[in-house]
Amino acid sequence: MALYTIGDLHLSLGSNKSMEVFGTAWAGYVERLQEAFSRLQDGDVTVLCGDLSWGMSLEESLEDLRFIDALPGRKILLKGNHDYWWNTAAKMRRFFADNGLETLEILHNNCLWYGDVALCGTRGWFYELDGPERAHNEKMIAREAGRLRMSLAAAGSAPKLCFLHYPPIYQGYRCPELLSVLAEYGVRACYYGHLHGVVQRRALEGQYGGVEYSIVAADYLQFVPKKICD
Image 1 (cartoon, rainbow, N blue to C red):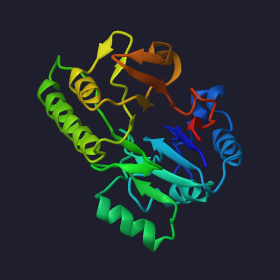
Image 2: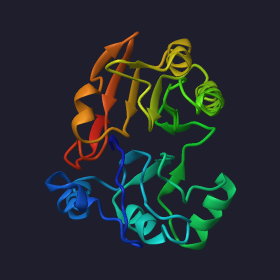
Image 3: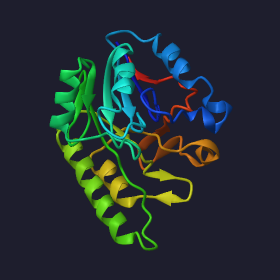
Image 4: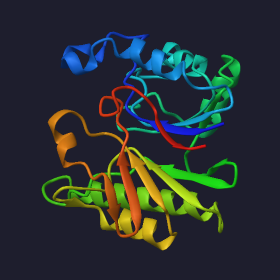
């Protein structure tokens, strides 16, 4: 049994938004994901850090969710900024059950477990407080910080790993509200996605404030899930 993570699958099996239009980095990405996951075992766990499907509703995302469900192991889903299909936890669990999606779980206002390690997280938000969106961004940052705190608090004193969609830190950028929560709860590692293309050069890979950060966007990982631990 092993724990993995990857984000930004950007599947579009039920719609027409293939990421292949963005160049050779995304060529054959669905097949590459399937090949990489084929090396995993049924007992493995993979945390998926958001932007999973281009579907605009649960129904429109069904083929993408079926693709994810069919991959080996247990999959823990996190919301990304493009996951417009995301709904209430109760509705998603009901939809999963009604459609036989038995390997999917939701990380949202809760924590889940890999052995005695707590898997915590939330979507996150960009810390951009200038311009006309300032009030909205302040509200969203406060909400996401609260959700992260709720997730980490649910873990009690257990060792904690954190999974976000948005990076809380990268070159020239800090989100102090989220960083302070990570530090307060003694998170040992944080995994995030969202960044693509040339901006991945600004991603933090390494330690900051006692937390080990890693970018796990699918194109950054060459569509191979990152192994965290056995």
